[in-house]
Length: 237
Image 1 (cartoon, helix red, strand yellow):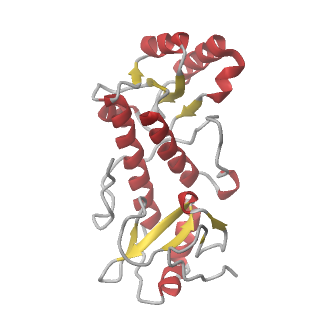
Image 2 (cartoon, rainbow, N blue to C red):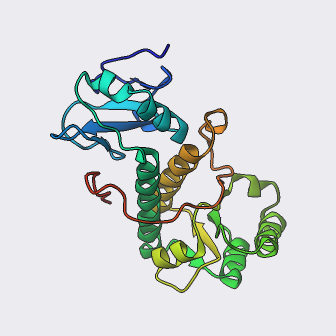
C-alpha cells in the first residue's frame, strides 16, 4: 500500500501519494488545494499552501484521483476532477511550447527542411523537432541528414515529436511547421527540460527514466493544445 506522507514541501525528497515512490521535486508533480476544496495542478511549484505530490506520470495522477488519495494526503475535502491528468498534460504542453517560443525569440530555432539541414551542417544543433502529424519520409530525411552530418555525435541530439504542426507554427510565429531545429543555448536548455517533463508524463512509468546528456526525447502524437483548468497557475518565463 502506498505510503501516505504529509508532503509538506520540506526536505529534498517527495513521496507519490499514488504509488509511494520517492523522488526530488523536479522529478515529481505538485498539487495544491483551492479554498473550495478543488485539487489544482501546480507545475511550477509556486502556489501557496501545503502541497502533495505524485510521480511525473499520467497514470499516477489518474490513480491518485480514482482512489481518493488526494483527500487522504491533504486530510481534507479534496475534489479531483475526472480530467485532472488531461489538465496536467495541457499545462505541461503549454509550458513547453511557451519555452520553445522564448528560444525562438532568442534566435535559437530554425524551421523548414532546408533551414534544418543547413543548421545540422553548421553544427551546434541541440534538438531536432518533427511535427507529430508530419510525413514519415520527411522525418527520415532529417534523421539521415543528422546522422550523416554528425556521425556518432548525433546520439547526443534530442529528438522531439511531442507537438503537432499547427502547435509548432503558433509557437514559432509561422505557418504550420513540420521540421525545426533548436541550437544550443540557455533558452534551449530550458525548453529541453520542459519538453522532457512532458514526455515523461506521457509515457508509462517503466519508460519514464530521466535522460542525461541530451539523448533522444520522443513521445507519441502531441495532445491537442488547449486551455487547462482556469484554477491552475499560468506558466511564466
